[in-house]
Length: 136
Ligand code: 5GP
Image 1: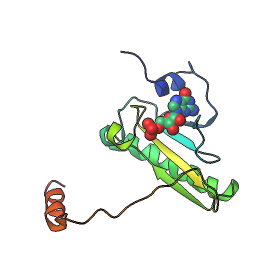
Image 2: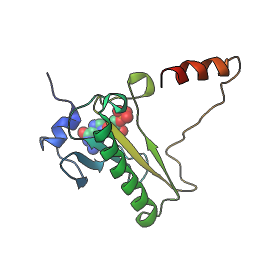
Image 3: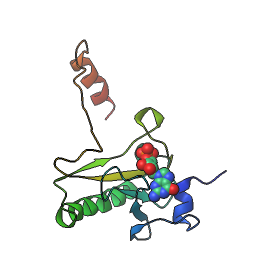
């Protein structure tokens, strides 16, 4: 099976601007900087996305994402941070290897708009909540 792009980066076959590495996690700048400091935190073992990653590995990736978010606010002058992970193409996932985006946000700057529209009209919220709750 053809390696995905992040497996190639992890194996050193493709260069990256690395900012963190340990036995389980690698973090590097996204090649396409949505904002200054936009970072990808990836699990070294191949898993398709957040939903399919074993909990322990997922926690390690999230720990690193949190630290990088904290540093972005402290050292890059960001006023906020978006922590984002896409699961499956319908959500916008383009690289099928679990990764978390850390996107520093700067007041007044453009480049990234996360618009959460209210589409609740016509939805049966009690029924939806019941369905999800029953399986947890
Ligand atoms: P997704 O859309 O899957 O959540 O995000 C994939 C991200 O990987 C994109 O933001 C894209 O810019 C980034 N990306 C794709 N190829 C490369 C690459 O070769 N190097 C780096 N550093 N980032 C990449």
